[in-house]
Image (cartoon, rainbow, N blue to C red; front, side, top):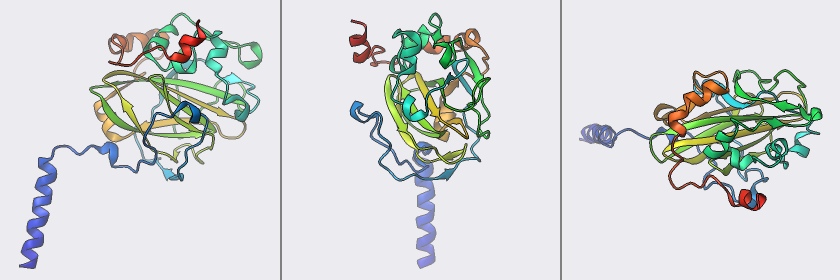
Length: 277
């Protein structure tokens, strides 16, 4: 009788899972940062959680293509010195900021606004698509100094509906991530390896275009910027750049996605309004 009960219970469980529909794999992995985005007062604080130290080298969904300045910000004086500075504001004389660049409206402005850092910090940069190798612990190094640099990368995530997702960053050293004008991640501690993840962060995506801006600043040694999402997000959403390899082909690729801003999300922040008064 006991064996029959266990068999019946197991059968019921299987049918319950099947009948309940597809399990949302966004929550199959351990999520140790929730409740975002980060409040402005905490923008530069590290996560108050223990690092997971997870090896994600087996993941096949690491993002390899990014849109951003064609070269790094150089001679940053160490990531500790550069991290609090808005280098997008600095390079565009306030026409763009890190916050506004992580919106559809800000991204569109890169068609006409160049990144004009002074010569000491890399000079004028065009916007383009660049590709990285996730397993490479120096994938931030691009035709310039390999130490004391900051790298910016953008992806557009086309979500089929409002949804929660889990992002898993790996970085050396200080990482900051904005999505749709809000900051979701800040961590000045390197993750230990190019595909090692310390924090799985639950984020909110909106139906349509979601603009993610990823910045990593480093001082010396390894220099890497890596990111992937949970399996469900990679399955149902489309991430760009995909087949594009320069600015022109990137905007052609995302033209349909960027046509309509995410519903209910202002693309101009209060900080930008005050700045432009």
